[in-house]
Length: 90
Image 1 (cartoon, helix red, strand yellow):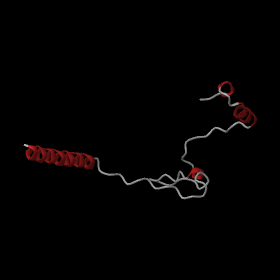
Image 2: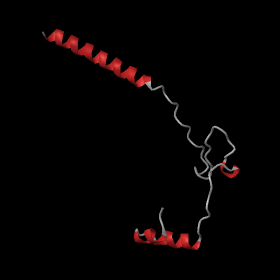
Image 3: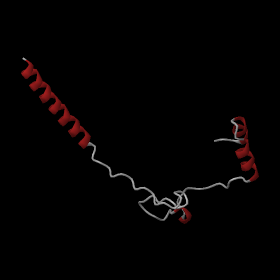
Image 4: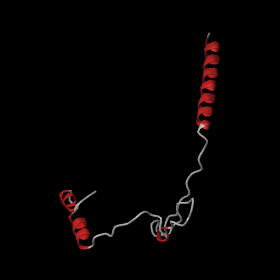
């Protein structure tokens, strides 16, 4: 945690003064209705945080085995191409 002395030593004098003038209230876990804690299974983003723009959806998760299949297929293809190139050179 940053305390006032660390803020001042790091050059954040204005922030330290603002924190001293307007201390922040303690917050609990983000499960209250004000922070959409009643929405089960989802994370919602406030329009205030995004400047009124809709939040970007998370990219669809790919199965982890797809990358291994692609890697193996490329390795076999590259090996085949190398084999035929060497056969043509001889």
